[in-house]
Image 1 (tube, rainbow, N blue to C red):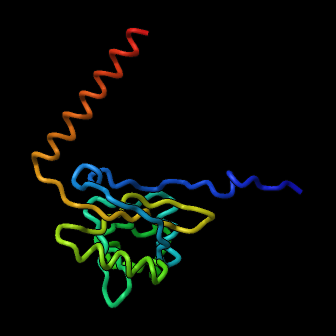
Image 2 (image 1 turned 120 degrees about the vertical axis):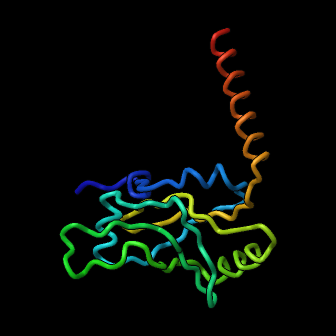
Length: 159
């Protein structure tokens, strides 16, 4: 009988990234949350048919809900398919929800999903608390990133 190593068991397979989130928000904190999905939805997630582009999370009645996530209908899922874009419940501990509620009520902070991945067969989401960037902040971030890239390139040429 082959034993699983802890690294193989805890490995995560990233299904979808929200590339715009790190560009449009300054990420202050992130945490992992479970995702409540139907049978055909999890099959579509495993197939990688997920879009997080305009997704956001909202706290309603002390529950966290994920909005505007597009999970494509499963091709073999006939009448069992649900709507591609619908609110989906997220699974978090009560203390985590309360802490997020306090942070989300601060002015300018929002809950943004960064990525969806599979861990041990369960769909998980990386949820972040972020503050929206202005246009000039985005330009500064791009300039800093390019300056760092130029420095790294010059150092690698020298050595």
